[in-house]
Length: 350
Ligand code: BGC
Image 1 (cartoon, rainbow, N blue to C red):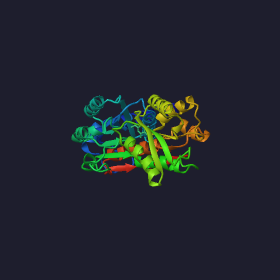
Image 2: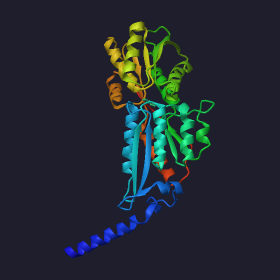
Image 3: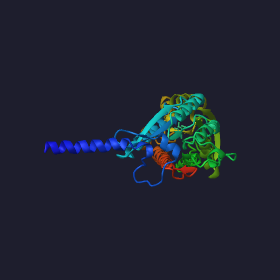
Image 4: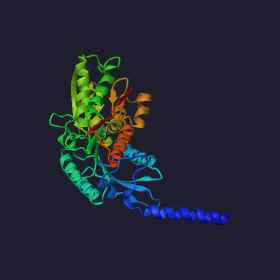
């Protein structure tokens, strides 16, 4: 018995050795489309005979609540898609909110022979530089979260449209802004707590270079004015997506404008968490004498919406976005054609 088992094991080992000797010509299981030559060269076969694809993921900044959820899900989802014959070696790097650092990281990914690159740009104004580098190296590129806008401020960025191997995966930030405004419109007093005929608000913005910040700022208010509401902006400050800055801005606005502040709009939940702390410290009560809106639907903010300490938020679906980004990256790895744009919907949480 033992002998039989031993010789069976030996056979398996020999077969494995033979497979290893086959070099980089293995194709991913269940896919008849050959990967491009460049990709096949970069893929490695490990001792088990599996094809390992090298995936480089560049995140604008690790120290960001939302992008932390997003990048963890990218990694976790790649793992779930591994099979005996296909593995993904995922390297995730922190751009530390510095474009020069990120540019170096992308260059390193290229020299390391990444098979696909997923990039959350530090600056969308540097999209061309990054796209040119990656396209010249013949590596598929999936841009996420920060959309480089076309000349008309829309999804027609030439660097994406002109390159079949480049795409953007994201959510249309106009929708999230509109939902914030619609949540306010759905309140019994439509945000006009003191009944003076206008909604007096404070806007706390993310990085102004980021279309998500621009659109949320614009469309939240547009939803109100489109519905015929009069609005008054008491303060509009940049909080760079950060909780401490959100708290600081809200605290200053509340001390300067006091009870006049009826609604605080935050471009994201990170800053809304800070604003919530400032609201509490100022002795104000959400739902009674002030309203607070965010975007992302971080778990703690969903809780706050349930217990009334936040008026509403908008789900920025990091699961849907990260899975789409990974699925598209794998399509590209398999040599399949990809679209230039992939959109994931926001969901209103109130
Ligand atoms: C999120 C923010 C995040 C930003 C990073 C946005 O879509 O709502 O929370 O800080 O992306 O670019």
